[in-house]
Image (cartoon, rainbow, N blue to C red; front, side, top):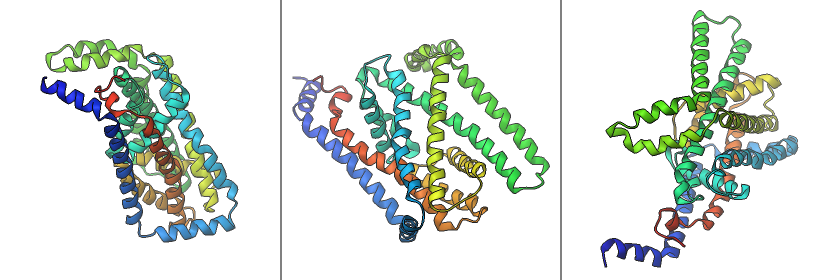
Length: 339
C-alpha cells in the first residue's frame, strides 16, 4: 500500500476525531482571543458600570431595538452570499446563515478578517469552494464601496458643522475623494467588461494558475453587482442604525443627521485602516471618543457605545457560530472523506 493511500485510510478511519478536534481547536482559539481582548481593557469595570447605570436611567427600548436588528444585519449578509451560491448548489437560507456566522467566528481569530472566507467555505461542496470565495469577495467589495460613499458624505457633513471656514486644501481633498469614488464605482459596475482582458492576461505562463478563477467572473452581470450593492447598502443602514440606538441609550445626543454623519465617518476611517479585528476595535474606540467628544460625550460613554456594538454584532454571532461548526466535516471539506 502506498504512503498516500495509507494516509487517506488513516484520515477516513479517524475522521470523527479529526472533525471534533478541529471544532474544539477553533472554539479554544476564539475563547483565548476574547479573553485576551477583555483582559487587556483596563477600563472594563468602568464600561460595565456605565452600562448598568444606563440600564436604570435610560430607556431600555434602544438596547432592545439594537438587539432586534442583530439577526437582520447578518441575515442580509446571508441573502447576499446565498444569491451567488444558488447557481452552483442548492443551499437553504438557514444553511447560508450558519455559514455566515461561522465566518464571523473565523474572522475574529485571523488578521484583516481573512478567515471569514474560510469559515464560509466549510459549508459548501469542495468543488464549489472557489465560487464561495467569489461570492464573498464581490459582497465585500460592494460593502466597502458603500462604506466609502457614506464615509465621504459623513465627513463632508461634519466638516460643515464643525469648521466654519474650510481651508483651501480641503476643496482639493474633496475633489480627489470624489474622483477616487467615481473610479471605484465605474470599475465595480463595469467589472464584467474587464473579464475578457483578464483572461487574455492569464494565458501568460506565470499567470496560468489564475485562468480558472478568472473564468468564474464570466457569470457576473451588472444586474448581479447592483443586486449585491443594494443589499450591502441595506446592511450598512442596519448596523449604522444599531450604533445610533446605542448612542441614544448612552445619552450621546447630537442632532439626527449629525449622529449618522459621525457614525459614517467612524466606519469609513476604520475601513480604510487595514488592521486586525481586535486592533480595529481599539482604533474605533479612539475615533468614537474623538468624534463624539465634539458633541459633549464623555470618554467612557463613547467607548461603551462602541464596545457594546462590537459585542452585539460580532461576539454574539461568533459565539453562536461556534455551534454551526458541529455540523461541519473538515475531512470532507479538504477532500479526504467522500461520505
